[in-house]
Image (cartoon, rainbow, N blue to C red; front, side, top):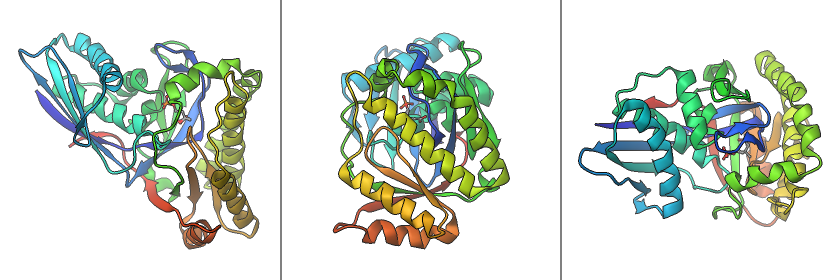
Length: 322
Ligand code: PMV
């Protein structure tokens, strides 16, 4: 009983932060993302009869008890569905840095869900896979699909899942990810979500989410970059306002982050189709149209005294068995 799957991370264009239900990871608000082709997590899962322990190997190294425990709990749910008790060996290989705000858990839990379902012989549609992936990591719900994806927050396990808004070939938006810090971030998103409600601003951000989702959905369907840029930057700044005003506060931005945000805004003011967004880490995702890629790269690498490593991603496909 072995299967292997590939899944891609995604970058949230409209972000979720804070859960309505932390155990089921039902988010406080809906979200929209772009699945990132070019970056991938390849996960193999082998259920071994006679073994009752799980093992998790990430990029050749056995992972610690916290990560293994979380992955095992995810498998427990799937094992119950399949009536299987065997332990599993999970092996994951990624081509991008982990835990640094590049949605590594999204790709990992989407790949784990798809590989484990296949190894267990569960024939599940994408909506069901996305609901299951959500239990592992909220953003993994979206990585089940390719292209432009919306996650409906829902309020129960059944109603909280994702669906595709438009396929990957609908609009060639590139994501230039400026790696300011490849180290593992100081507060993981699971702990971060639990703090969101302590910010007095969170209620207003959640109440305004339907407006932002609608603006983003429309900008994607109309391929209207200027409108997309506007709503994506607002939404990112709003999420970080929650983070900075929670108890205790979370400050993910560094001086370099702010410098790049300013460079991107300047570039757009000069006519380039580029905007920024930032997840729960200091790295900046610069979304751009292909015609602005060279200008964006130049501004990102010539800006300031240092040059930073830049990862390049493009609209990518759904999670799949390989
Ligand atoms: O899926 P998690 O628990 O890693 O949380 C993701 C949170 C953000 O990346 C900051 C926003 C999002 O919607 O992806």
